[in-house]
Length: 488
Image (cartoon, rainbow, N blue to C red; front, side, top):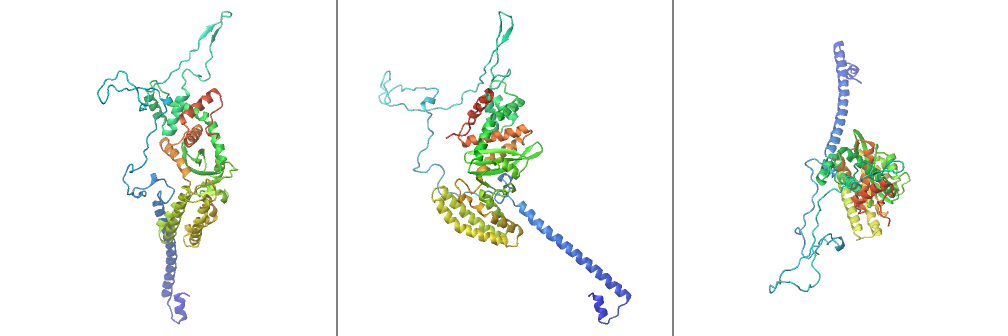
């Protein structure tokens, strides 16, 4: 009932003017209440946006997946505690010196003989040698001089028909100027190891060689030849990765001109397989590992991995810990839960390091993880039933992926973090920053093949230059390509 109705019900008489004024006041009051409700709604949305923007502003490599290179100036990486020991060698430590090169590998021997006796000064003309000589070696880079082999194709005139015949050129010499497999392999090695651009590569070869080096355009064609020569090795690594029992998978951005691509990597302790694709999706993950991959996949919580069975996943606990640090920095109930989770995760990592050092067995690891898992269950349920919507959603997701948090304790070869694949992406990220991506489909294929061969060769402890030389030679002669992986 309005105020005017209340007055009339009490027997008070109101003139038409007063009645109109009351009605106008009631209309203005109703409009003001509607406006207040609208402003309160806008204020709540603005406050939520401010909280979200402050959260994004506070993101760094310690509380998110951002790399340390994107940390703002005020963020400092945690420093290791200074030990009590002084720098350098410690008293009583075992001496470590470089081993001498084997005698059969020595290229030149220079003998030095004493000229006179250190005791009486007698000048030696003939004396008996005692014991084996002391060996000292100098390792030096010889002067770099290009080896130029000239193939001369002679012509002969037939005495019977007077026809001129020219000798056929060898298969490996298809043009007037051909660059040998080792020089091409050296160019590819500088490209993938040092991320040298085509112009910097041309300049480096100009400094190394005493002849005119390949031009920038020719270098691109040579690298495309290396890409074709390494295709069998690329397929060999892909087959081995898909047959592995555990693999870490990660992805990072790449560019083809102005289009955004994704560089995927599947990594094990002995293999690194790369693939460039247009999307970051389930279908591309299946193209990387194969639709029927049966091993355990270590990854983050990206949507491309949600279709995998929970029993076939291991969530990266390092990513999880960074999420918990972000909770911790929000304060309030989220801060308390984040502090609790970070403390428990540090205990998990401590136990894992003890297991890796051989101090505890896998059975012992499973037993001591039991109480930690129980505490994590309570933590997730508290977050799920809390008032923070984001924490509740994350807790609900992690409860659904519970077994994927602890696969490392059940399966041999599974790590609790995705460090293997993240380390495999580090060289690619640096290459991306210096090359600005690729410009063609052939360039994309070259990047994924060179990265796969280079990083796998490093893990296999194989010389990249020698392998690429052998692969290019086999490609040019149509021979069986060399195997990249150890057969034993």
